[in-house]
Image (cartoon, rainbow, N blue to C red; front, side):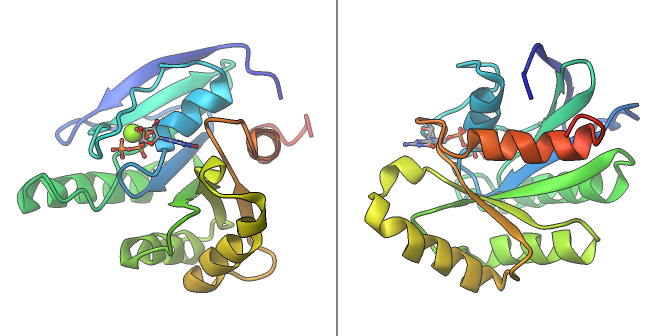
Length: 198
Ligand SMILES: Nc1nc2c(ncn2[C@@H]2O[C@H](COP(=O)(O)OP(=O)(O)OP(=O)(O)O)[C@@H](O)[C@H]2O)c(=O)[nH]1
Ligand SMILES: [Mg+2]
């Protein structure tokens, strides 16, 4: 798939009503700082379309990027960001939950985990929710550039076993820095958003 256009179309905060979009949505979920916004930038070949930061807690709204006038990539706030108050964290949590439960165009939730770390409790909850909600689990193991080649297979095995992934579940090694996994992820996205094309 070739990305011809990418536009930030809608930004939703905790009090916003979500848009009733006419096109498919693919959402990116995961812990704060795992690289959700960076992944979107890499996919669309834009350095700073989605704002990123080395500090966790950067994305605090639900951001809808309209791609090729045909589908949306939806950047979600990260979970598990310890620096904000419990109250705000709960509000974000509820906002993400509400989005995931009510969006009529949501076709896939891609779960991002850092390839270097074992997934945590929240990752497992998100993974199980994705599965139980009838979506095919797709995990992007991010920041692959931080590992040596020789470390990949154990790291991937650890992520899979911690999440309890089954053989047919998809896991894609990804780096926003090197573009590792970009083509695989785009192929998967195009299969969902435009079955005729693939
Ligand atoms: N080396 C490396 N760094 C990455 C990669 N992806 C993201 N980063 C860095 O990780 C930090 C967090 O990236 P973001 O894309 O802002 O993470 P996020 O998941 O959107 O974070 P929140 O919005 O806080 O939930 C930034 O400093 C990025 O440059 C990657 O693939 N490789
Ligand atoms: Mg972000």
